Length: 221
Image (spheres, rainbow, N blue to C red):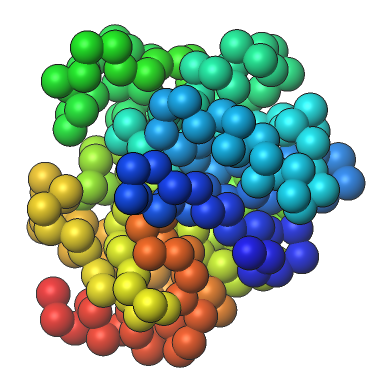
């Protein structure tokens, strides 16, 4: 689903789970935000080709956090694209993504996905991709969870800081959020943003009075 020019919400299905990586692109490059579950590289490739973006145009991967449904295809992407890809993540989740520490919530996996992180991100950093992307450190779901604000289109890529149902933001998903107090503080960071649309990795797009929705959620914290 195209949310704005050069911003596509992908939909991937995995054993009944629907997830929403984001594809950003312009004339120069394409950026993938989160990579899906392990083994979904062909699903990713197909979804990209449907919107006219070849896999070869992919130059950057931004990981919102370390969970297996977000980093799952990273090893396959790196194997195919090699040094043509730059991988970004927050420094607090980097050692988990690189396999130096067991994944916080998927440590039971016998062969967890792992790959390199080339550049670490900090709160407030701006990336010069696709009209400028602002990094927002939103811990709680994981220590290094980040959200991304696309300044040009006023789209918030919320990762797993929130989830949605049928276009309505439902707030924090408590069963998968180890640090609820941090997650509540993270939601309040969105109050200073002018947001036209929110994409949750689980639940997808919410674009009706989202600033008011977020304000309502924050008042209940």
